[in-house]
Image (tube, rainbow, N blue to C red; front, side):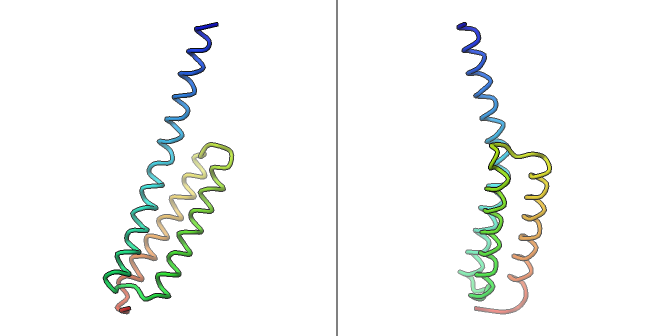
Length: 103
């Protein structure tokens, strides 16, 4: 009985670590992109409307991520979809920060 309890506890720890490891790269990318948006606003590279549009995209990413995690794990397909969304958002940030418009 004691061995079974230890095994179950160890399994739970491993599952939690895998789940956290799956989330970490996506969370880091989202954070970096949010910082790029704020930096663009501070430097005047983004107009107010551009920043709002990008922040709306960040909220859309947050909702998609929450939807993907609703079953407690992130499948490879869900991870791929989120990464594609992050790639598109990153291109939007770059394009709007370098379009020549100033705040």
